[in-house]
Length: 538
Ligand code: PEP
Ligand code: MG
View 1 (tube, helix red, strand yellow):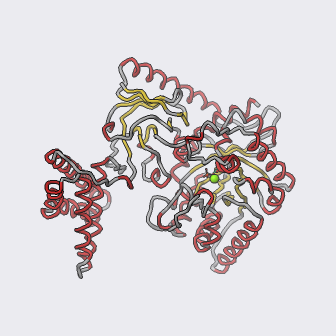
View 2 (cartoon, rainbow, N blue to C red):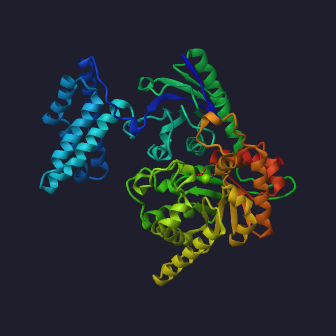
């Protein structure tokens, strides 16, 4: 049995098999090998596995969508079995003594170049198929595959770290727990785990080595421990602990349907944070009273091009409709920093967290912003919408945003497209915004305090940098005073004020936030019922 320690960012116990996830950019390394036979066998095994996957994909597509669509997986099987393709790979392994990943990668490059140089459109189109099958084999070889075929049952993910663009690839119901080598309490890995209600450890002292793939493990999110190949005694103890945790969770169910009200009778709006349409189930299961933060940028991640207006409209409309008139606050695109999508082509920056991100991108690339606003406004006809803008630092920005919103309204009027009423708010997540919140408040309906970024910028501590954990104090008086100031200034102008950063779920601070006069707390769905209990005790 191997025991490893990490920092727990969400409690709970998970028992299952490990899936080692490696970053795609680290996927193809060039290595010299000594055992040619073993490398050839490794390639053969990966190829067989890929063929099996393609066969089942073919059968599934045949059942679900018909023969024409299924054919592509048949073509992929033929290409993967192609003699020239295979001889090129085995040739590189044998004569150049290179590792299988590299041999597949080089063969892929050569074959793609050959197909792309052909005159015939059909043949040129085969280049993409070669790339597809090669990527499949490489990802099997180095354990970076996250497709549903690679994860037939729910798994414990072990990774170096997970960027938001990577987490969007996972099927959420296939994840039992997340264990990362890097990460911090406010990283998006931690936020994702909380949204999914699954135990998670960051800064865990474990090698991200495919040798752990398929091994049985236990994640104890209470003690911050990972057990690989647990012995019988540990397994019995952990199964018991899991049972108790499940019972504890079941007990919280009695909070469902209860009012979120303090002992002195003040009602607090208890909302949830989500990253996409798929998270609405968790919001409803945990009886949240609305959605206080829909991180819309997740619609833009893990893809090759911008989501169009209609696609966005459908997503926003679905969330609004499913929430049946309850408040849904959608934050406009907060791309940049750790949330990167290549097609935005953001130039490389020295300090991305202080760089071109969020509203700065939207106010520079107005066409991207206007598309999202059109989708949001159209969706406003289907529920109770609030639109919120991230990373604000000045009044000038809000004035410009409101001008653009008015222009989009006029455009929709001209096209005779319906929209409803909606609130406009901003995130207070920079010290600048908190300090001038008296000047900002008259321009908006609400503030939502993003304590994750507000803490990082106030304390000058990168939220992703775990080596600064000893310096990071989430309860730092500077942060609490900025929160207090923001709430006071919102109220002076008749605006409401909430918290949607992770600090909102910190139950040691609940009483203090209530004393400050907070109106709303928006937390990961998994915290909702526990926080309702806490508020009712205050
Ligand atoms: C925040 O900064 O607190 C916040 C809620 O936004 P994000 O975590 O997505 O940056
Ligand atoms: Mg933020």
